[in-house]
Length: 289
Length: 80
Ligand code: SF4
Ligand code: SF4
Ligand code: SF4
Image 1: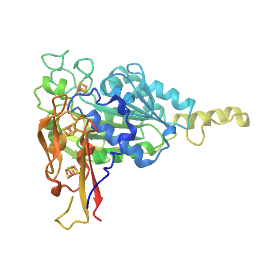
Image 2: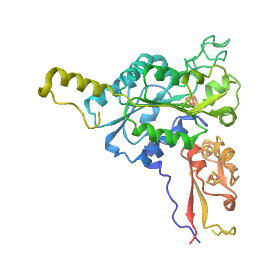
Image 3: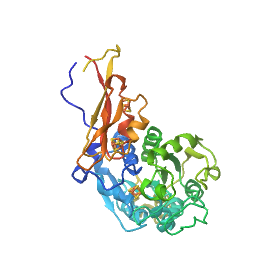
């Protein structure tokens, strides 16, 4: 058999190939998560004109710029309020927030908890690489206890956020965590999140070899992927209280932790307005809201 | 390309060596060892993977899923 035509990577159609190679460092985990996301979009067959990607600032914030989709690069920490506005103005859209831990959990932390509390119908993909990458490796609310960052040169004295627990306790209806080692599982959870109505949150643990790993002498990104493989324990449905990662050596609990239903913000809004105004009120975005 | 293993399909890998940044994730996590890092390097000075043992490749596609630089893609083709 001779092979004359080679098949093209299906991810390619989602990329702004004129901007490749991208600026991410060799071995950075963000690109791997983009592979999974592109394939998840392909798998669930969302029409591409009904999909919007919103990123904040940071290394992961560049995702919006590299995806050939309707994508928005917003100000630092404000991806979620931007996405909320986008969703409410055009409820037909599937709105995905794709950003990093520094952007979503630190600067945008307030927006994150309130979007989860409101059950705003947006999907949040949070790439957690344990520090602020783009700005030079400062401590983040996800940095492991005692580890080095530019702003904690003697070790971080802070206990990091347990992000799945944070959003689950605020009321997110879908919460999952995977690492960039779990590409197949991550893709599957992304498909579920894209199909889910309500606030869905996926934390993706990823290596940042240039800043976090080098400063902490943790080896290459292959080493961190191996660590992910060794330390990961899949526990679907486990109480999110149990999934904190405080120390670098801790076991990494991954899986789909929460998958429930409750009315979204728009459902409740329509209901209240209907009660008040009766037939005078025309519900907004009823089919998708 | 021929297959001597009697399989009904072959695994194929396409490598875009100019995009590669030499992180070695693909070769480290390929379950069959079909790809190895080349001694050559691209115009940016990175070593890139080489499809050294096509007969071993199952076309599982993991290399393409892992690659953070969209530089490699593995897939399966039926043998006619
Ligand atoms: S600084 Fe870290 S997170 Fe940013 S691109 Fe480099 S490896 Fe990735
Ligand atoms: S397709 Fe699978 S077996 Fe073939 S080179 Fe890629 S990872 Fe290895
Ligand atoms: S995973 Fe991609 S960037 Fe890394 S060595 Fe393989 S082809 Fe190159």
